[in-house]
Image 1: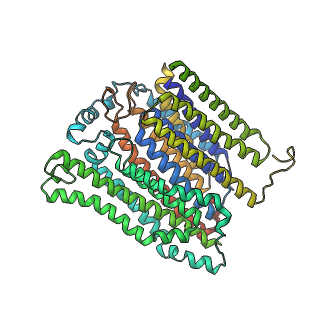
Image 2: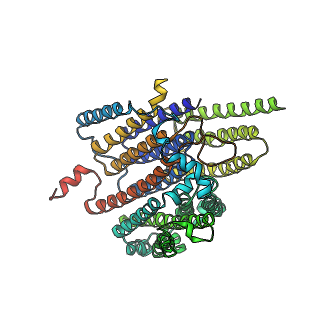
Length: 331
Length: 105
Length: 117
């Protein structure tokens, strides 16, 4: 039965990929890519990867779709050019695909418990993680403790993306958005027109933010953690901005403050590492943080998840503000 | 008792699946934007409601049922709001609710 | 049962190649970025399929569960998803600036307008 669900979902993914290739209207393509991410998330759930499914649904469907829509709002909405040399490309693609499929012939069967990937380090993580690190969610304990340096790199990558977007689009462009709107004579619509949306959004924003906090702190016991929580928290603010306008959204949190908050998250993460070094252990060795290794691990993972959540929230919101303030330039 | 519960939940899920398929067929075949929007909202409210109720009956009185109830309430509030937002924007941009059904596709 | 053994990997490769095809043939920059996203997601599917164990459950320790799926690919892919979205964000920022400079996001029109290319 599992296999049937698997095969059906994968077939749908293939059909959507072909449709994305053929369609010219970019809005439809973006909606299809959001649908593709959601189907991938369902596929990940059937393959027991619940944390990954959560992240893909929040990040791939939520943030990527919003950013893509902001971009086509500021640029063209239809694809105009025809494909370049489709036959040659098809030949290259088919050859590469054939070689890769030949390569998969040697791979272990799907679901095989004796596969090499399950033999070396994974059984140690599965068996020892509760005694050495603590949280029942083994993915969180690997992410936070065993492979903590990789996660530090990931947080720095997000931070760098935020830096690049701000460097390309600029804080000043965002600050002047309100002035440009007023200069162009564009006033915001009367809010009473959108009564239903306004009321529903006001009900939901506190719930969304509460859910984000739940996901952040519950990441030790169930699927969740800093990344998903940061994205959900940012989406609450994005929701508000979509309804009430970018100038009101930027007044709730100014972009510069978001920059400071983002740096604070990375600093917290790196700071935990430096603290453990000063206390006598290795970099990011949480055992030395408290009197007892398990408590130290618990505190360490709590602090770094907080740092991750803070950075992801601020950078995602910053990128959204940067993209939305671009639209005003063309009007 | 068990088998009655199983039967009712199977009925709910089956009906929900039928509504989902009907909604999908409607989105493809109906002529106008607003009629297609109605078909999509049938999927959102009817299909989701019935399938979630069927699942709640299956899991009895436990924490997963509470979570499913929350999901159901949120879906019931947000999906009609989304359909409303779509319909309102379409009306503001000039789409007409009642064109001649066989001229416009 | 041979289809079931490798179907996941073949579909992942098919999706990878579709994404690749979109990147190399279409001239529209946003379509290229979406093709790149398609490519990365298919790699995620490949990795997560490697980690699945038949009869296992999600790697959250609970009493009574004996077999878990391998948590290591999950950790790697979590990082990869977030890095993928960061890449898309920077790519889209570049697209916005290109549009401001050249007035178009189609590659051939940009080539015509830019003398140095």
